[in-house]
Image (tube, rainbow, N blue to C red):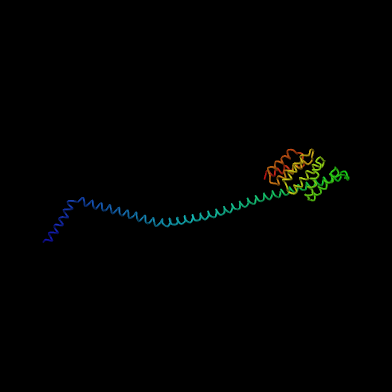
Length: 272
């Protein structure tokens, strides 16, 4: 009896609740369905993202590995290019050094050729003078350093020069110059005295002696001496002074046989 009554009361409570709150029950079911639907949509979105991750991850990893490989390859190429550039720079530097050496060697050879050519010209002039002396009047037995003796001693000293016995030649020409500076051969003696020092490569003393040639009025050795002044300074490495002396020959001796030689020497020094 009690159980039956309790059951009746429970059913009555439920019926009473539904009768009293019918709208609340419906709203609860609706909200529950809405939340379930939202949960389902979120679950679908998560599943989609996981699927996309599984698809994109291999591609991203592959792209990353390619990027790393590409950078490593670029770094490797950069290293190779830098090595090649350094190699080329070294070759260029080596070629520049060789070019400088060739220029230096070329100038040295040129200077040697000039010296040889000048030596030939000098010897030719000395032999020409000696030939003219021998064809002149005969030498008589007169006191030392009269006209005839002067000529004889001059030829003897010139012979010493031609045989490269420069000290003997210097002694002979010095005696002649000091004995009679008015003799017709005195300017020649002075010139050949300077040539002796030039041949001995005593260029400083040679310059001093070549300058003295201009003290003789009417000398025909002035252009010869002027050329040798330029060559002496050039041999000493005084290029500025050498250019001045060559230019002086061009300016004051335009009709000289050495005019072309002076112009060529001046051009060569201006280029170097």
